[in-house]
Length: 72
Image 1: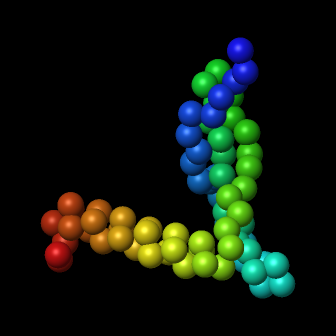
Image 2: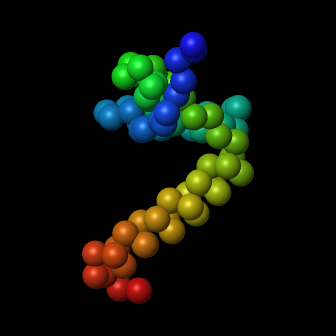
């Protein structure tokens, strides 16, 4: 039976990179497999996807702040 990815996490200590020429961003990630092993990879995003991801993560940061008792 083939090994399957269960989830992916951000790779610690590695920064995202934006390639203006390709108009793409690359976020280093680590795939976690169901056999306990991991694989390095990258999440490649178009300019529009980078903007969308920024909006989504900003919403998460705001929700986290509210959950900790910050301003609504």
